[in-house]
Length: 213
Image 1 (cartoon, helix red, strand yellow):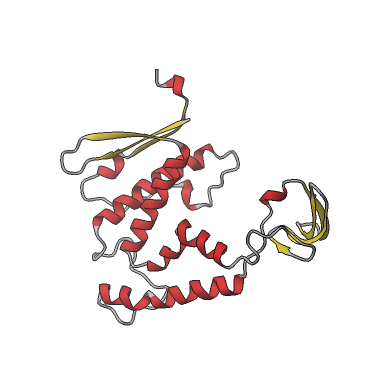
Image 2 (cartoon, one colour):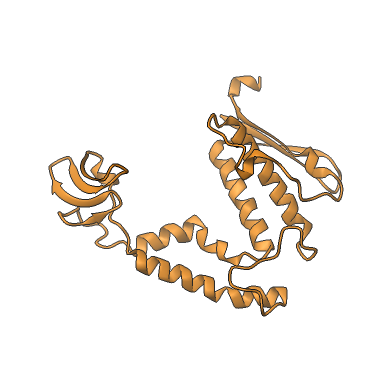
């Protein structure tokens, strides 16, 4: 399936169209989210990038490349028995503790050392406070503080990015049969209002190839 999304070219006010797969559109949405968050001073979002997220998990996962052994802690519970083509683990899945048998052995990975994982992430958060506060010239901004999206110091491009995000996520919300009016994606509240261009943002999801012909 393909997706169409359009945004107003602010300079010449022409409309542009870009066709994307679902995965590509998710990356665009995440990139815009990252851009707008950094632009309001939420520097801690850098550690959420999948490159660093996955790298840390891999770095702090013990016994990489070694076959599973009884007693290993995995993301599916503790290994209690191993067969030729299956593994049994003990864990909790909502109905109390139980033992489950898995045949997709190659997909079962050991649990990382989450204490070291969180230690690094917390250290990164603390380390980013000073450069963020230097850039906004406010030494008293707390670690998890930031400007609001409407702050006069925030560049308009951050609000444009956020408005595009709102349109995309609202379209995803409309396709969800279990959608709720209580979630942030149920409504759109544009933040960039200088030229009305945010009203021109359009997003059409799940377009089959034969619908374009």
